[in-house]
Length: 257
Image (tube, rainbow, N blue to C red; front, top):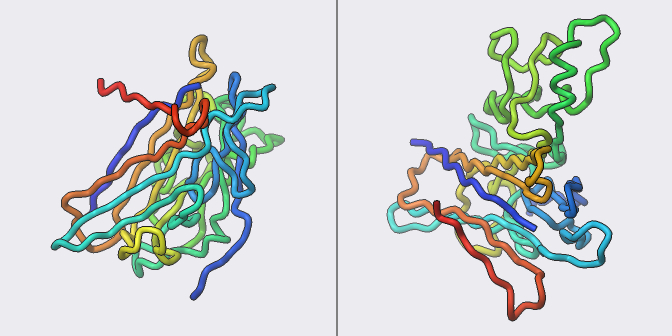
């Protein structure tokens, strides 16, 4: 039985392939934030940290996901932090449960509302040049045995596939969005010391061009169980390492409502 878990959050003020995984920088309001293709948030592999624009002040070292599931008293987990990475770019083959080559999926996707609005108006015009952000949205892949809806899209012609040349376009929240696909199946689990969850993480971050939200980043992470196990219980969370002040005075609060 497969389960999908949605975690929402707000952020205020051997056969491994080793390479530099892609990172995109989000510039918004007074903040500059990094997002990595592994699913790591707010730190590049070269050490860039989130900072206030125009100031030499890092305020958030990284955000990483921790996940654990239990079946028949056996633990399965993944840790994805700045120093302990058990997630890799890309999805998992739905037939074989083998992770796809991370080099083929080494990407962080970005798209804006203005690009989509122009696409809707002009996609059928002869001289229209489609933005790469819409053309390469990860719903448009050509690999077999991958979930057809890895990334949400509006099916303009209602044919069940993502074909933006016929009017389809990415479906996302906010005015600008950034998207990653990662899994814990590809590499070894040396940090957690457990068996693999065999799960995908689909993370969407987005911003709003509205007064009062200039320095707010919204996000959602979907965890999809691609194994044949039923985890009960299952835990998922984000580890945040703030850099405000020093390591002795960092604080975090949660608004439960």
